[in-house]
Length: 240
Image 1 (cartoon, rainbow, N blue to C red):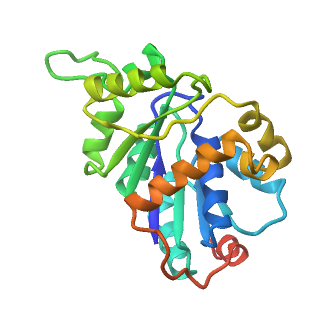
Image 2 (image 1 turned 120 degrees about the vertical axis):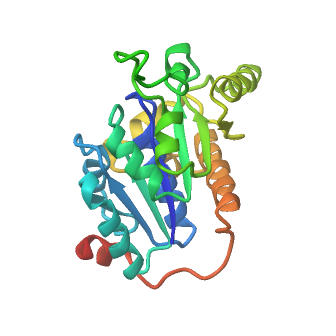
């Protein structure tokens, strides 16, 4: 089983949208998927309540129970687990990153969002300090492979995306994901019906971006082809 962690030190960066879109992309690819929802707002769990399909399974999970829940998912035959963590929660971000084979950091291409990638934590010389940066939290978690996923870009802003990716790598030392996500209305509208962009507009540009992101992740995690587990979404949810 492979594990993806989504983390950020800001809210509203698109973590949950990215999590559910990737979960559905993997399910449509024939994989058994579990999405662990660590956010107290339970947005992913609410989204799942509107769906009929068992796969992906969404499991509302406390941070302290992440290792146990992942073990349940493994035993039940999951191919992929996605951990959706809340913003501004160091403990949740560290837990998601520590157990992940790959970490995605969704971020808007704006100064205040990008700044959270490189802010410095408190030190003895500066006891008040600033909030821990995502980079600092990743060090605590063991420095798993990580990519910053730029989100909410204008669909036609190719040059802006390239410039923002260069800035990300320069100020944070983290790799920018070669795929980015654009500000399409379907990403915002789809969750209200328990769906994703891929399901509402399967041939649309939003679905294309998600598929490109999913294929990039499959390449990073060596998930292209191969055998799938024998579990199913209902058993995962019930087992959790």
